[in-house]
Length: 99
Image 1 (tube, one colour):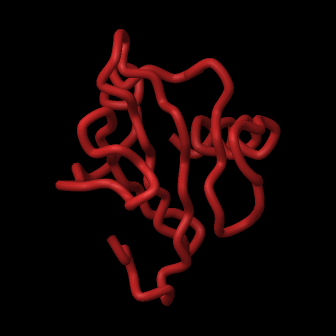
Image 2 (cartoon, one colour):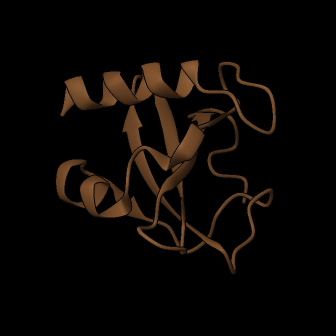
């Protein structure tokens, strides 16, 4: 699992989208390179009831992992193959999951 998370981290850092990419921010993935089916089968995570406010709750759903002293919120689209759209990182002392 660690190599897959490292690959995701590199992919999300390299991909830019409709916003900035920086530590502690939101990393947008170009072209939804990871589907929810693959994520579900390969990455330990917890289901979240909601997503951060900057994502439409009617169009997206979120999952979370904990790694490297950060909470990583994965944002998936309900459309098609449910591609991964973004990964938003939170430091664990940030008032953990402020949404």
